[in-house]
Length: 356
Image (cartoon, rainbow, N blue to C red; front, side):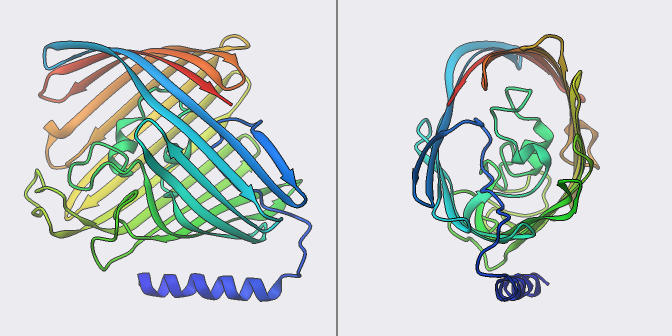
């Protein structure tokens, strides 16, 4: 099935390239981490180079397992570069100086608004929150359900690969209507090993997302992963051993609403790791109480094994964010996480963010 999908992608690319004229007036712009709508731009004829980035630092006080810790920490120092060689061809690079790791490199070729191909290391199109940059997330620490099920952090068997992998992906917008498009899609084939990792099995992951925008302010989304994991450690539930391959499938559905009084987003996720079924979800809200001030409210639910009630965690978060200038802000929030039949943890964290 996966080999068939990969072959289908190649056929679609070849067919579309043949059908398109040499010049297409409508250009699909290179979609990148939207940390700043006004990057530093340098143009050389048709070639355009854009530089942008951001940095985030935190101070946190956490009470976990009846112990209290506190400290300052640099979370990210990100620099991004986007080069549009012409209207069709370009590439994107993202590097984190804090962790000294390459996060993304991918090249793109745009055939038409309906079809663009990307090859390289990129974010996997699974869940709305995974595709959002940290500069726009309401909560300082990503929702645990997305982090765990999207392969970002928290899953010791799969690893912490911040939702990125190497592969090939098709993306585009369909059904133009009143100056916008009603549908947006992503469909890709990835190694499944994670960011900056070589392939660790002979299988490939098929990952897709379909977004429907009935209005310009509302998005209905669904995404999936059909994949194979390679266990880094033994399954805590006895499903597989370290070094073994296992089924790793995911599914999500979500909604996003952008209004003047509030920004709302929620998603529900389900997973299957070698027969161990998991589920989770979150609801997130930004209430715009003043021009630069937002009230943040977030609820997260995660059950790592549907057959074990004690694997469930409920997390409640509330806080404020103040926008200093464009996408520079200060966030402060309090989180209370309660594991069923386990101890509760409390976290107060403040983050300072600058972006250019």
